[in-house]
Image (cartoon, rainbow, N blue to C red; front, side):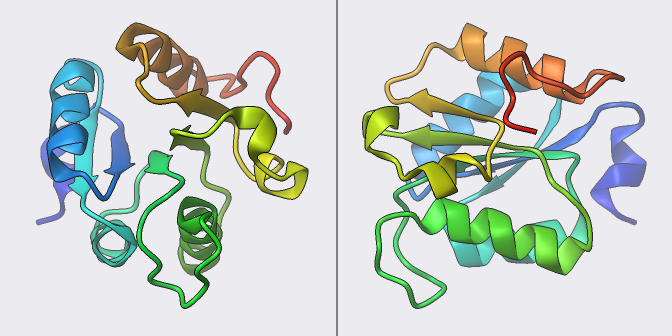
Length: 143
C-alpha cells in the first residue's frame, strides 16, 4: 500500500534537505496540514518520490551533489529530475542559506518561491497552503 492511500485527504509533500534533523523538524511544524515525505539528500528524495509521488516539494538548494554536477544548486537539479521522472510539473519551494539575489535567474525560474534559512515556518506553511490550494498559484509565482 502506498503512502497516498494511507494519507486520505492530506497532500503528500517532499521535504528534502541534507540535514535530516532540519527536515524532520520542518515536518513536525507542517504536519497538521500535509503528509511529509522526509528525505536526506537527492538520492533518497528521488527514491521516495518515485514510490509515492508528491503534490509539491520543499527542497534545499545546497545539498551534496548526486547528479554529478558540483555547482552548488543540487536542489534545482533534483527538482528538474523529479519533474522528468514523474512526467509532470511539480511545484517546488526552494530553501537556501544564500541570498536569493545570488541565485541565477534560470534557477529561480524553475521554482515557485525561495526561502532563506533560517526560515519562518509560518511563512513557509502559508505559501505551501496557497500552492496546494485549488487554484494552485502563489502570489508572485514565476509560472
